Length: 434
Ligand code: SF4
Ligand code: SF4
Image (cartoon, rainbow, N blue to C red; front, side, top):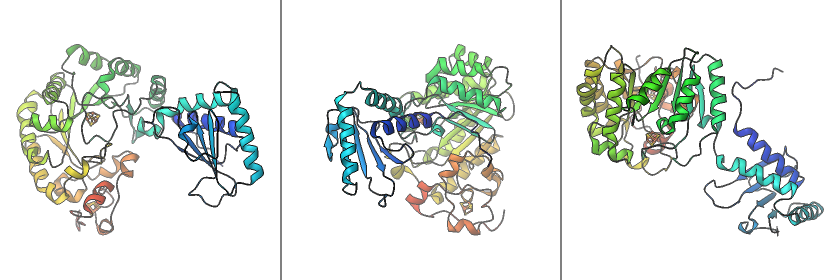
Protein backbone atom coordinates (compact mmCIF):
# COMPACT_ATOMS: atom_id res chain seq x y z
CA UNK A 1 0.00 0.00 0.00
CA UNK A 2 1.36 3.42 -0.94
CA UNK A 3 2.31 5.52 2.07
CA UNK A 4 1.14 9.10 1.86
CA UNK A 5 3.95 11.46 2.79
CA UNK A 6 2.65 14.70 4.31
CA UNK A 7 3.81 17.78 2.45
CA UNK A 8 4.04 19.87 5.58
CA UNK A 9 6.02 18.93 8.65
CA UNK A 10 3.55 18.16 11.45
CA UNK A 11 3.82 20.42 14.46
CA UNK A 12 1.30 19.50 17.12
CA UNK A 13 1.09 15.74 16.47
CA UNK A 14 4.72 15.11 17.60
CA UNK A 15 4.09 17.10 20.81
CA UNK A 16 1.01 15.02 21.44
CA UNK A 17 2.80 11.76 20.64
CA UNK A 18 5.64 12.68 22.99
CA UNK A 19 3.17 13.28 25.79
CA UNK A 20 1.29 10.05 25.09
CA UNK A 21 4.55 8.09 25.11
CA UNK A 22 5.65 9.74 28.38
CA UNK A 23 2.30 8.99 30.01
CA UNK A 24 2.40 5.41 28.75
CA UNK A 25 5.87 5.04 30.33
CA UNK A 26 4.52 6.56 33.53
CA UNK A 27 1.47 4.35 33.82
CA UNK A 28 2.60 1.19 32.10
CA UNK A 29 -0.53 1.43 29.92
CA UNK A 30 -0.21 0.90 26.16
CA UNK A 31 0.63 4.06 24.15
CA UNK A 32 -1.56 2.81 21.31
CA UNK A 33 -4.65 2.58 23.54
CA UNK A 34 -7.58 4.97 23.24
CA UNK A 35 -6.31 8.06 25.06
CA UNK A 36 -8.71 10.95 25.51
CA UNK A 37 -7.37 14.10 27.09
CA UNK A 38 -9.35 16.72 28.87
CA UNK A 39 -7.57 19.94 29.56
CA UNK A 40 -8.63 23.53 29.91
CA UNK A 41 -5.80 25.63 28.42
CA UNK A 42 -6.90 28.60 30.51
CA UNK A 43 -6.69 26.65 33.78
CA UNK A 44 -3.88 27.66 36.07
CA UNK A 45 -1.55 25.04 37.50
CA UNK A 46 -0.62 21.65 36.17
CA UNK A 47 -4.01 20.09 35.85
CA UNK A 48 -4.75 17.52 33.21
CA UNK A 49 -7.00 14.51 33.05
CA UNK A 50 -6.14 11.68 30.75
CA UNK A 51 -8.86 9.19 30.07
CA UNK A 52 -7.61 5.77 29.03
CA UNK A 53 -10.01 3.19 27.74
CA UNK A 54 -8.58 -0.19 28.55
CA UNK A 55 -8.54 -2.99 25.99
CA UNK A 56 -11.93 -4.65 25.85
CA UNK A 57 -13.70 -1.63 27.31
CA UNK A 58 -17.34 -1.56 26.26
CA UNK A 59 -18.53 1.75 27.66
CA UNK A 60 -16.82 4.34 25.42
CA UNK A 61 -18.60 7.24 27.06
CA UNK A 62 -16.84 6.70 30.37
CA UNK A 63 -13.14 6.14 30.74
CA UNK A 64 -11.77 3.22 32.72
CA UNK A 65 -8.81 5.17 34.08
CA UNK A 66 -8.45 8.90 34.69
CA UNK A 67 -5.24 10.50 35.91
CA UNK A 68 -4.54 13.80 37.57
CA UNK A 69 -1.00 15.00 36.93
CA UNK A 70 1.00 17.64 38.75
CA UNK A 71 -1.75 18.92 41.04
CA UNK A 72 -3.62 15.80 42.12
CA UNK A 73 -5.62 17.69 44.73
CA UNK A 74 -7.59 19.07 41.79
CA UNK A 75 -8.73 15.57 40.95
CA UNK A 76 -11.83 15.37 43.09
CA UNK A 77 -12.90 11.82 42.22
CA UNK A 78 -9.53 10.16 42.85
CA UNK A 79 -9.44 6.49 43.85
CA UNK A 80 -5.88 7.06 45.01
CA UNK A 81 -4.10 10.37 45.48
CA UNK A 82 -0.42 10.98 46.04
CA UNK A 83 1.60 14.17 46.22
CA UNK A 84 2.07 14.54 42.47
CA UNK A 85 -0.33 12.05 40.92
CA UNK A 86 -3.88 10.90 41.30
CA UNK A 87 -5.85 8.19 39.61
CA UNK A 88 -9.52 7.39 39.28
CA UNK A 89 -10.38 3.79 38.44
CA UNK A 90 -13.73 2.44 37.40
CA UNK A 91 -15.06 -0.56 39.25
CA UNK A 92 -14.82 -2.60 36.03
CA UNK A 93 -11.01 -2.65 36.36
CA UNK A 94 -9.86 -6.06 37.66
CA UNK A 95 -8.59 -5.78 41.22
CA UNK A 96 -5.14 -7.20 40.35
CA UNK A 97 -4.63 -4.52 37.71
CA UNK A 98 -5.99 -1.90 40.08
CA UNK A 99 -3.47 -2.83 42.78
CA UNK A 100 -0.61 -3.03 40.32
CA UNK A 101 -1.39 0.40 38.87
CA UNK A 102 -1.67 2.06 42.26
CA UNK A 103 1.57 0.41 43.45
CA UNK A 104 3.35 1.68 40.34
CA UNK A 105 2.06 5.21 40.78
CA UNK A 106 2.93 5.21 44.49
CA UNK A 107 6.53 4.33 43.62
CA UNK A 108 6.74 7.04 40.95
CA UNK A 109 5.07 9.59 43.22
CA UNK A 110 7.64 8.86 45.93
CA UNK A 111 10.45 9.86 43.52
CA UNK A 112 8.97 13.35 43.28
CA UNK A 113 8.28 15.65 40.35
CA UNK A 114 11.91 15.46 39.25
CA UNK A 115 11.89 11.66 39.06
CA UNK A 116 12.65 10.33 35.58
CA UNK A 117 9.16 9.17 34.59
CA UNK A 118 7.14 11.94 36.21
CA UNK A 119 9.67 14.59 35.18
CA UNK A 120 9.52 13.41 31.58
CA UNK A 121 5.72 13.39 31.61
CA UNK A 122 5.51 16.88 33.11
CA UNK A 123 7.99 18.26 30.58
CA UNK A 124 6.08 16.70 27.68
CA UNK A 125 2.82 18.05 29.07
CA UNK A 126 4.21 21.56 29.47
CA UNK A 127 5.43 21.51 25.84
CA UNK A 128 1.99 20.49 24.55
CA UNK A 129 -0.25 22.32 27.01
CA UNK A 130 -0.21 25.84 25.49
CA UNK A 131 -1.57 24.44 22.24
CA UNK A 132 -4.28 22.19 23.69
CA UNK A 133 -7.26 22.28 21.36
CA UNK A 134 -5.35 23.76 18.42
CA UNK A 135 -4.67 22.18 15.02
CA UNK A 136 -1.82 22.80 12.60
CA UNK A 137 -4.47 24.10 10.17
CA UNK A 138 -5.22 26.95 12.58
CA UNK A 139 -1.79 28.33 11.71
CA UNK A 140 -1.06 27.26 8.15
CA UNK A 141 -3.12 26.30 5.12
CA UNK A 142 -2.30 25.53 1.51
CA UNK A 143 -5.31 25.45 -0.73
CA UNK A 144 -5.74 25.83 -4.47
CA UNK A 145 -2.14 26.96 -4.74
CA UNK A 146 -2.52 29.67 -2.09
CA UNK A 147 -0.28 29.38 0.96
CA UNK A 148 -1.33 31.13 4.16
CA UNK A 149 0.66 31.52 7.34
CA UNK A 150 -0.78 33.01 10.53
CA UNK A 151 2.04 34.73 12.37
CA UNK A 152 0.16 34.87 15.68
CA UNK A 153 -3.26 35.78 17.00
CA UNK A 154 -2.47 39.07 18.70
CA UNK A 155 -4.19 42.05 17.11
CA UNK A 156 -4.43 45.80 17.54
CA UNK A 157 -8.19 45.52 17.12
CA UNK A 158 -10.59 43.26 18.98
CA UNK A 159 -13.48 42.68 16.60
CA UNK A 160 -16.43 41.15 18.37
CA UNK A 161 -17.15 38.91 15.36
CA UNK A 162 -13.58 37.57 15.12
CA UNK A 163 -13.50 33.76 14.86
CA UNK A 164 -10.13 33.67 16.59
CA UNK A 165 -9.24 34.21 20.23
CA UNK A 166 -6.64 36.90 20.87
CA UNK A 167 -5.17 34.60 23.55
CA UNK A 168 -4.40 31.71 21.20
CA UNK A 169 -0.65 31.10 21.29
CA UNK A 170 1.47 31.65 18.21
CA UNK A 171 3.34 28.81 16.56
CA UNK A 172 7.12 28.86 17.16
CA UNK A 173 8.97 31.02 14.64
CA UNK A 174 11.09 28.08 13.53
CA UNK A 175 7.94 26.16 12.63
CA UNK A 176 6.61 29.08 10.58
CA UNK A 177 9.89 29.34 8.71
CA UNK A 178 9.96 25.61 8.03
CA UNK A 179 6.41 25.65 6.69
CA UNK A 180 7.15 28.68 4.55
CA UNK A 181 10.12 26.85 3.00
CA UNK A 182 7.89 23.84 2.37
CA UNK A 183 5.24 26.05 0.78
CA UNK A 184 7.80 27.73 -1.44
CA UNK A 185 9.03 24.34 -2.64
CA UNK A 186 5.51 23.79 -4.02
CA UNK A 187 5.64 27.00 -6.10
CA UNK A 188 2.46 28.58 -4.67
CA UNK A 189 0.41 31.04 -6.71
CA UNK A 190 0.72 33.45 -3.82
CA UNK A 191 1.73 33.57 -0.16
CA UNK A 192 -0.59 35.36 2.29
CA UNK A 193 0.70 36.45 5.70
CA UNK A 194 -2.13 36.69 8.17
CA UNK A 195 -2.83 36.67 11.88
CA UNK A 196 -4.41 37.97 14.13
CA UNK A 197 -2.86 41.06 12.68
CA UNK A 198 0.42 40.26 10.88
CA UNK A 199 1.70 43.83 11.17
CA UNK A 200 1.98 43.54 14.96
CA UNK A 201 4.69 40.95 14.28
CA UNK A 202 6.74 43.46 12.27
CA UNK A 203 10.30 41.98 12.38
CA UNK A 204 9.05 38.42 11.88
CA UNK A 205 6.80 39.50 9.02
CA UNK A 206 9.67 41.19 7.26
CA UNK A 207 11.97 38.23 7.86
CA UNK A 208 9.42 35.81 6.39
CA UNK A 209 8.73 38.10 3.44
CA UNK A 210 12.43 38.39 2.70
CA UNK A 211 12.73 34.60 2.92
CA UNK A 212 10.48 34.43 -0.15
CA UNK A 213 12.83 36.50 -2.27
CA UNK A 214 14.13 34.61 -5.27
CA UNK A 215 10.97 32.53 -5.56
CA UNK A 216 9.05 35.01 -7.74
CA UNK A 217 6.00 34.51 -5.59
CA UNK A 218 3.52 37.36 -5.04
CA UNK A 219 3.16 38.23 -1.35
CA UNK A 220 -0.08 39.44 0.20
CA UNK A 221 -1.10 40.57 3.67
CA UNK A 222 -4.40 39.91 5.36
CA UNK A 223 -4.54 42.96 7.56
CA UNK A 224 -6.47 45.88 9.00
CA UNK A 225 -3.80 48.13 7.41
CA UNK A 226 -3.13 50.02 10.65
CA UNK A 227 0.42 51.34 10.44
CA UNK A 228 0.90 50.82 6.73
CA UNK A 229 1.01 54.59 6.30
CA UNK A 230 4.50 54.46 7.80
CA UNK A 231 6.40 54.82 4.54
CA UNK A 232 9.52 52.94 5.64
CA UNK A 233 7.51 49.91 6.79
CA UNK A 234 5.51 49.69 3.58
CA UNK A 235 8.58 50.22 1.43
CA UNK A 236 10.46 47.37 3.20
CA UNK A 237 7.57 45.00 2.61
CA UNK A 238 7.22 46.11 -0.99
CA UNK A 239 10.94 45.58 -1.53
CA UNK A 240 10.51 42.05 -0.17
CA UNK A 241 7.79 41.27 -2.74
CA UNK A 242 4.51 42.53 -1.28
CA UNK A 243 2.03 43.08 -4.11
CA UNK A 244 -1.27 43.48 -2.32
CA UNK A 245 -3.37 43.39 0.82
CA UNK A 246 -6.71 41.97 1.81
CA UNK A 247 -7.89 44.74 4.12
CA UNK A 248 -10.73 44.59 6.64
CA UNK A 249 -12.87 47.67 6.01
CA UNK A 250 -16.26 47.22 7.54
CA UNK A 251 -18.03 50.55 7.43
CA UNK A 252 -17.97 54.09 6.06
CA UNK A 253 -18.82 55.44 9.48
CA UNK A 254 -15.99 55.59 12.02
CA UNK A 255 -18.32 55.09 15.02
CA UNK A 256 -19.85 51.98 13.41
CA UNK A 257 -16.43 50.55 12.53
CA UNK A 258 -14.84 51.37 15.88
CA UNK A 259 -17.77 49.77 17.70
CA UNK A 260 -17.31 46.56 15.71
CA UNK A 261 -13.55 46.45 16.11
CA UNK A 262 -13.69 47.67 19.73
CA UNK A 263 -10.65 49.78 18.94
CA UNK A 264 -11.49 53.50 19.06
CA UNK A 265 -9.76 55.64 16.45
CA UNK A 266 -8.71 52.73 14.25
CA UNK A 267 -11.17 53.38 11.40
CA UNK A 268 -9.24 56.46 10.47
CA UNK A 269 -5.91 54.61 10.76
CA UNK A 270 -7.20 51.81 8.52
CA UNK A 271 -8.24 54.38 5.91
CA UNK A 272 -4.77 55.94 6.04
CA UNK A 273 -3.23 52.50 5.51
CA UNK A 274 -5.49 51.79 2.53
CA UNK A 275 -4.57 55.09 0.93
CA UNK A 276 -0.86 54.34 1.45
CA UNK A 277 -1.24 50.95 -0.24
CA UNK A 278 -3.03 52.48 -3.22
CA UNK A 279 -0.55 55.32 -3.59
CA UNK A 280 2.29 52.77 -3.53
CA UNK A 281 0.63 50.99 -6.47
CA UNK A 282 -0.28 47.86 -4.48
CA UNK A 283 -3.47 45.86 -5.02
CA UNK A 284 -6.13 46.29 -2.34
CA UNK A 285 -9.08 43.99 -1.72
CA UNK A 286 -11.43 45.51 0.86
CA UNK A 287 -13.40 43.07 2.94
CA UNK A 288 -16.36 43.93 5.13
CA UNK A 289 -18.63 41.87 7.30
CA UNK A 290 -22.39 42.30 6.72
CA UNK A 291 -24.45 42.22 9.91
CA UNK A 292 -27.10 44.26 11.70
CA UNK A 293 -24.57 47.01 12.50
CA UNK A 294 -23.06 47.36 9.04
CA UNK A 295 -26.15 46.80 6.85
CA UNK A 296 -27.53 50.34 7.39
CA UNK A 297 -24.08 51.64 6.40
CA UNK A 298 -23.51 49.33 3.43
CA UNK A 299 -24.55 51.72 0.70
CA UNK A 300 -22.53 54.58 2.22
CA UNK A 301 -19.54 52.23 2.46
CA UNK A 302 -19.66 51.67 -1.30
CA UNK A 303 -20.09 55.39 -1.92
CA UNK A 304 -17.15 56.23 0.35
CA UNK A 305 -14.93 53.63 -1.32
CA UNK A 306 -15.67 55.28 -4.66
CA UNK A 307 -15.18 58.80 -3.32
CA UNK A 308 -12.13 58.36 -1.08
CA UNK A 309 -10.12 55.39 -2.41
CA UNK A 310 -10.92 55.06 -6.10
CA UNK A 311 -9.33 58.40 -7.06
CA UNK A 312 -5.98 57.09 -5.79
CA UNK A 313 -5.97 53.99 -7.97
CA UNK A 314 -3.22 53.92 -10.56
CA UNK A 315 -4.51 51.16 -12.82
CA UNK A 316 -7.75 49.29 -13.51
CA UNK A 317 -8.39 46.44 -11.10
CA UNK A 318 -6.13 47.84 -8.38
CA UNK A 319 -9.07 48.04 -5.98
CA UNK A 320 -11.66 45.35 -5.38
CA UNK A 321 -14.30 44.76 -2.72
CA UNK A 322 -15.64 41.66 -0.98
CA UNK A 323 -18.74 41.24 1.15
CA UNK A 324 -18.37 38.70 3.98
CA UNK A 325 -20.99 36.38 5.42
CA UNK A 326 -20.34 36.40 9.19
CA UNK A 327 -19.39 33.30 11.09
CA UNK A 328 -19.77 32.58 14.78
CA UNK A 329 -17.23 34.56 16.80
CA UNK A 330 -14.67 32.87 19.07
CA UNK A 331 -16.27 34.44 22.13
CA UNK A 332 -19.69 33.25 21.01
CA UNK A 333 -21.34 36.44 22.19
CA UNK A 334 -22.35 38.49 19.19
CA UNK A 335 -23.35 36.20 16.35
CA UNK A 336 -26.85 35.55 17.60
CA UNK A 337 -27.35 39.23 18.38
CA UNK A 338 -26.18 40.68 15.07
CA UNK A 339 -26.47 38.05 12.33
CA UNK A 340 -29.22 38.83 9.82
CA UNK A 341 -31.44 36.62 7.67
CA UNK A 342 -30.38 36.40 4.04
CA UNK A 343 -33.61 37.84 2.66
CA UNK A 344 -33.01 40.98 4.75
CA UNK A 345 -29.43 41.31 3.51
CA UNK A 346 -30.06 40.60 -0.19
CA UNK A 347 -31.61 43.88 -1.46
CA UNK A 348 -29.17 46.13 0.41
CA UNK A 349 -26.14 44.08 -0.59
CA UNK A 350 -27.25 44.17 -4.21
CA UNK A 351 -27.66 47.96 -4.17
CA UNK A 352 -24.24 48.39 -2.53
CA UNK A 353 -22.62 46.11 -5.11
CA UNK A 354 -24.22 48.04 -8.00
CA UNK A 355 -22.60 51.29 -6.84
CA UNK A 356 -19.17 49.65 -6.89
CA UNK A 357 -19.54 47.80 -10.16
CA UNK A 358 -20.87 50.95 -11.87
CA UNK A 359 -17.67 52.67 -10.76
CA UNK A 360 -15.55 49.90 -12.31
CA UNK A 361 -14.65 48.15 -9.04
CA UNK A 362 -14.72 44.34 -9.05
CA UNK A 363 -16.98 42.84 -6.38
CA UNK A 364 -16.99 39.40 -4.76
CA UNK A 365 -19.88 38.30 -2.57
CA UNK A 366 -19.69 34.49 -2.75
CA UNK A 367 -16.84 31.99 -2.42
CA UNK A 368 -15.07 31.04 0.78
CA UNK A 369 -16.04 34.10 2.87
CA UNK A 370 -19.16 35.05 0.97
CA UNK A 371 -22.86 34.39 0.74
CA UNK A 372 -24.93 31.57 -0.72
CA UNK A 373 -25.48 32.40 -4.37
CA UNK A 374 -29.27 32.64 -4.04
CA UNK A 375 -28.65 35.79 -1.98
CA UNK A 376 -27.05 37.41 -5.02
CA UNK A 377 -28.30 38.63 -8.38
CA UNK A 378 -27.19 36.53 -11.36
CA UNK A 379 -24.53 39.00 -12.46
CA UNK A 380 -22.80 38.79 -9.07
CA UNK A 381 -22.46 35.02 -8.97
CA UNK A 382 -19.00 33.59 -9.52
CA UNK A 383 -19.19 30.35 -11.43
CA UNK A 384 -15.87 29.21 -9.93
CA UNK A 385 -16.85 30.14 -6.37
CA UNK A 386 -16.86 26.60 -5.08
CA UNK A 387 -13.37 25.79 -6.32
CA UNK A 388 -11.98 28.98 -4.85
CA UNK A 389 -11.97 27.92 -1.23
CA UNK A 390 -9.85 26.32 1.46
CA UNK A 391 -11.09 23.05 2.91
CA UNK A 392 -11.64 24.58 6.34
CA UNK A 393 -14.12 27.00 4.76
CA UNK A 394 -16.04 24.14 3.20
CA UNK A 395 -16.28 22.49 6.63
CA UNK A 396 -18.21 25.48 7.96
CA UNK A 397 -20.87 25.06 5.22
CA UNK A 398 -23.77 22.72 4.78
CA UNK A 399 -26.04 22.27 1.79
CA UNK A 400 -29.71 21.90 2.72
CA UNK A 401 -32.42 19.72 1.21
CA UNK A 402 -33.46 22.82 -0.78
CA UNK A 403 -30.02 22.88 -2.39
CA UNK A 404 -30.45 19.43 -3.87
CA UNK A 405 -32.93 20.86 -6.40
CA UNK A 406 -30.86 23.94 -7.19
CA UNK A 407 -28.99 24.30 -10.49
CA UNK A 408 -26.28 26.29 -8.69
CA UNK A 409 -25.40 23.57 -6.21
CA UNK A 410 -22.14 22.67 -7.98
CA UNK A 411 -20.85 26.24 -7.91
CA UNK A 412 -22.28 27.44 -4.58
CA UNK A 413 -20.74 26.73 -1.20
CA UNK A 414 -24.11 26.83 0.51
CA UNK A 415 -25.02 28.52 3.79
CA UNK A 416 -22.89 28.38 6.91
CA UNK A 417 -23.84 25.86 9.57
CA UNK A 418 -23.97 28.78 12.04
CA UNK A 419 -26.58 30.46 9.86
CA UNK A 420 -28.73 27.32 9.62
CA UNK A 421 -28.66 26.95 13.41
CA UNK A 422 -29.76 30.56 13.83
CA UNK A 423 -32.24 31.08 10.99
CA UNK A 424 -32.95 27.64 9.54
CA UNK A 425 -33.36 27.74 5.76
CA UNK A 426 -34.79 31.26 5.68
CA UNK A 427 -33.68 32.99 2.46
CA UNK A 428 -32.33 29.79 0.87
CA UNK A 429 -34.12 29.44 -2.45
CA UNK A 430 -33.41 26.76 -5.05
CA UNK A 431 -32.61 28.32 -8.42
CA UNK A 432 -34.11 26.89 -11.58
CA UNK A 433 -31.76 28.66 -14.03
CA UNK A 434 -28.05 29.39 -14.09
S1 SF4 B 1 -8.73 42.74 12.73
FE1 SF4 B 1 -9.02 40.60 12.09
S2 SF4 B 1 -7.74 39.41 13.48
FE2 SF4 B 1 -7.98 41.43 14.40
S3 SF4 B 1 -9.70 41.19 15.81
FE3 SF4 B 1 -10.50 41.97 13.84
S4 SF4 B 1 -11.15 40.14 12.68
FE4 SF4 B 1 -9.79 39.45 14.36
S1 SF4 C 1 -30.33 26.89 -2.85
FE1 SF4 C 1 -28.46 26.10 -1.91
S2 SF4 C 1 -27.11 25.59 -3.61
FE2 SF4 C 1 -28.75 26.89 -4.40
S3 SF4 C 1 -27.86 28.93 -4.35
FE3 SF4 C 1 -29.03 28.66 -2.44
S4 SF4 C 1 -27.56 27.89 -0.95
FE4 SF4 C 1 -26.65 27.67 -2.97
